[in-house]
Amino acid sequence: MAKVKGAIVVDTEKCKGCEVCIPVCPEDVIAMSKEVNHKGYHYAYMKNPEACTGCTNCGIVCPDRAISVYRVKVSA
Ligand code: SF4
Ligand code: SF4
Image (cartoon, rainbow, N blue to C red):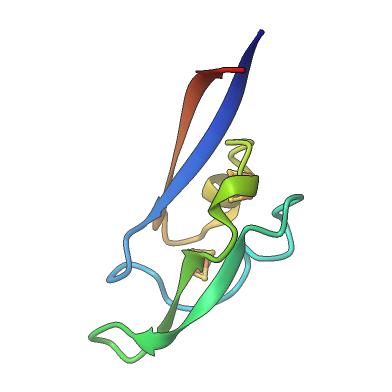
């Protein structure tokens, strides 16, 4: 059976630290970094990358289009 696994890539310089992406993730993948980007915003990152299913919720809600979602099939 092929399973689908996801991954997100956050464009840290586009992220404005609004945190809208955090509650929409059903897998609790996203957290805010302690570091800041060059505008001084904390940016989103994958604190729990193994749990991402590639559902795209986070990419859809991000008002700054800072998240790219990738889906990969992995054979179980
Ligand atoms: S794609 Fe879905 S599971 Fe993965 S981080 Fe975004 S909201 Fe969470
Ligand atoms: S929704 Fe977009 S801009 Fe807001 S914290 Fe998440 S990645 Fe950053």
